Image (cartoon, rainbow, N blue to C red; front, side, top):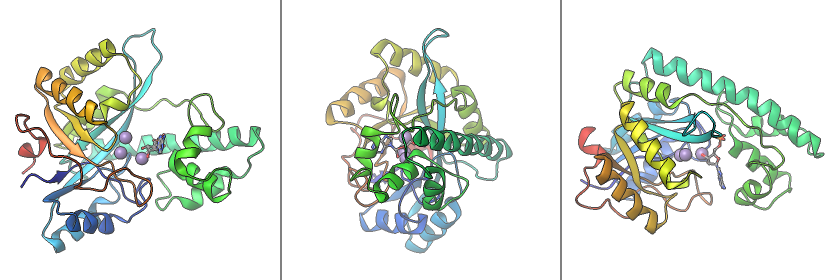
Length: 283
Ligand code: AMP
Ligand code: MN
Ligand code: MN
Ligand code: MN
């Protein structure tokens, strides 16, 4: 029982597979357990859980919360992702917190569309909205796919190279929730807070130490070590960080769908043996 994959997306956020199909894929790939961790929503959990029950696969209700954080008052803020695992999706604090983030996403999407119009690309709000299966969860990925469909770029990856990122058309700075609130919502809902793909954040090593220290002080307990967003060198780097801070270690593909992700659920290397896996606290 150690092939747990604890970070995956469905059509409830910016994944391409419905939650039930994602769970079926995890089962086919030999997972012992799978977590669904959609961005800022738990709308896929019920159907994912039902599918897992049918397949005899252990299912963990999760969420990936968008956060703005900066290492000091003067420094500019960075977007972080905090995964909550084993959350009660009926918890009022979690529900209202996620609702407010998704409302912010809707407002951001309007501004993103305006920014595209500035460079002559019109109708982007409607195009992205049409591609979002969950009309309350609009993300940059929906815009990226809309750019591919309209032949502005040939792939989602290229869409994020030419558009949608800092300094490029379609990018709108956004203030997400705080690190402290995200952890509070997860813990109120009985879940474990895990820092998602730490290697992907554009922050210095000393600032990473500040982040991990603060995360732990605020009640964060886990860190992703093996993720589709890390290089093998980063597997080692964040295994070291897990030991240093006494964090529970997590592993997850961050799967979004066929052709859009480096790794399918259950296919990444296993966690190093000496780390305490976060799933030991999730049974
Ligand atoms: P958002 O939370 O709406 O700002 O969008 C973040 C999502 O965009 C991530 O979870 C990824 O799914 C996707 N994304 C960000 N950067 C890239 C990239 N370079 N290539 C492909 N997808 C990306
Ligand atoms: Mn995503
Ligand atoms: Mn993420
Ligand atoms: Mn993710």
